[in-house]
Image 1 (cartoon, one colour):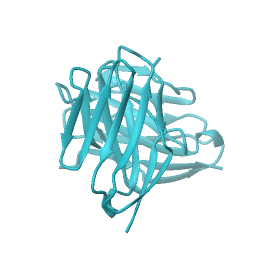
Image 2 (spheres, one colour; image 1 turned 60 degrees about the vertical axis):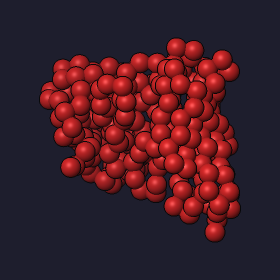
Image 3 (cartoon, one colour; image 1 turned 90 degrees about the vertical axis):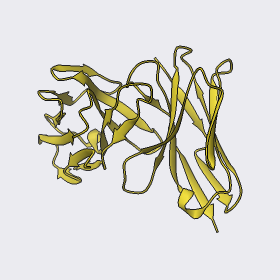
Length: 113
Length: 111
């Protein structure tokens, strides 16, 4: 039972480089989201998706793009990395119904130099 | 939008004592309040949650209380153990999936 899988676990980028953070879930959840975690700031929502083909912006979307071509995958793209994007990134998927528990991946630690 | 404040930012307790973390929220439409535990190097994991039609919920050594009038909710951990050491996050949501998190509380349980 894999749950939510994120790759890579660690990444170092140079300013201006681009990359994609991968996220996949095997729970058939409709809702998926990306958060960034910075010291003293909790988790802040970057983008989210309520189903395949539907995405929307969260609290801190600038500098990030997402797409949702399948229910399982929700990649996060950094088109031109900046030092301010140094952070730990978490992908989450959400079950439906009364509980609505969010399941998080293990995180990707990104450093932009 | 929703704003969630969490206190304290760090909490040190002796093993066996109780720990209390408090959160306030701003949006009266919020109706779902989960608590997450994050261990070092891992993603947050749900430990307990409460909905606005319930005032208190308990699961073994952890409990959550909700005061909708005052817009605050609290996490209580009794008989703390070293394995309770972690970062704890509260969150609030008024719609499916859009969780607003507090800044987190680092809990350290000393033997």
